[in-house]
Image 1 (cartoon, rainbow, N blue to C red):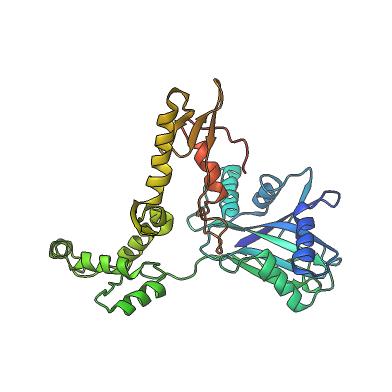
Image 2 (image 1 turned 90 degrees about the horizontal axis):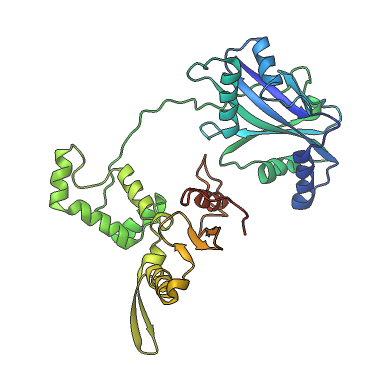
Length: 358
């Protein structure tokens, strides 16, 4: 049986997330709200008795100095509020807070949860304000949640029984599908290859689609694939996806590496890649000209560049070239952006001390 543990800041404490959310509703959506109060919710899907639930609630899930908790009931009195929005993750989406809460529960209780038992996190937003149904839906869908990876529940505060709270929802993937591998026929016309790339979200050009097709036309490739029991003259859907990903701009940096034919005022020049020609080669030339005064200590070889700052310290620098911001929220640990910028100096040499971002 699943149980809910709701954790809230005590009335005399500042609810920073609640204040921030109220400000964003006013400024971003131009909706009038008086205030917002939040609660962190842990849905524990495990066979725990009342004492064990209290042990978790009062232990790793709550800071008793500044927070209170409630088990299987509302931690916040609904009466001063008008609306409740609760936001959690969709089934199958990585829930890092829930995963950590599960690990903390196992350590606290001194035993391992059974297979399939889990802890899931969500956040409640109790809103005081004269909002319509449409307004509250906007707050949930445009401000508090991302429909690609999150789910939300909306209730008028007057319909929430404080003695019960919201029902426990365990966002588990409820279907068991047998994996099906399809083979993809690439013997198509040019416009059909382009349409396939677009419809499968491969982002491959016609030339790239043809190159893949030609590979599978190779007789040696066909014989080898046939000996392994694979479709001999066409890729599987997984193979095609792998090629699309590894040939993507993100992974391959095709723009920087591309061979470019450049013509200006009758002069034709071939550039063997922007990065090797104008960045890497130029850096090597500058370093050579500086000779003993070269202050670069590591360039293009580690996770970040290293330059000499003084006799005692070196400066590690990394610039993120792409990937953030993104139109789509990442799944699990897929986010790079500022995370990658921070990660790479940490992983340079024996590790650098991060000072600041620009």
